[in-house]
Length: 195
Image 1 (cartoon, rainbow, N blue to C red):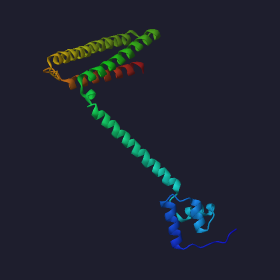
Image 2 (spheres, helix red, strand yellow; image 1 turned 180 degrees about the vertical axis):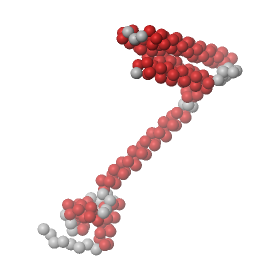
Image 3 (cartoon, rainbow, N blue to C red; image 1 turned 90 degrees about the horizontal axis):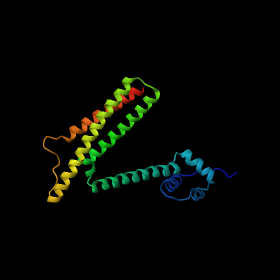
Image 4 (tube, rainbow, N blue to C red; image 1 turned 45 degrees about the horizontal axis):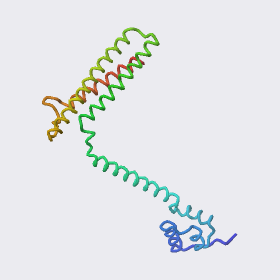
């Protein structure tokens, strides 16, 4: 076993700088200090130096965050380039409402099938039928709105004009809110009926 060697503060500080701030091999730093690699690592821990593995993990976390923020920036740029028009257009809102209504209709039809199979009482089945009727009426209204928008766009395009955003007295937000409330009420009724 080699004799213990005392190191001056300057030697320790120089080794610490090499270890923490450069990519110098730990074996080379240990050799400069006259230590074996295992002893060097014990001293690194004893002296409280920052472990390189931790630096790599910190660097990985920083790199992951940079990649994530760059991906978010690129996604935002892509959405901005598209003009985010799909978020604001009535036609897209109508398509989302139509999809939600069709989903609810499918859920109620499934519930009616289960009700028939399980021979549930007549009241639940009638309630589901009334709800299905209201959903079908709402779907027809949404489809009429989409057709009217398409006709207005086609007419405006043939005239070389821009289609009006809304009809006088028609509130798109009110329609969205009403549809949202109705769908949530139907979901709650559906969940209460199955529970």
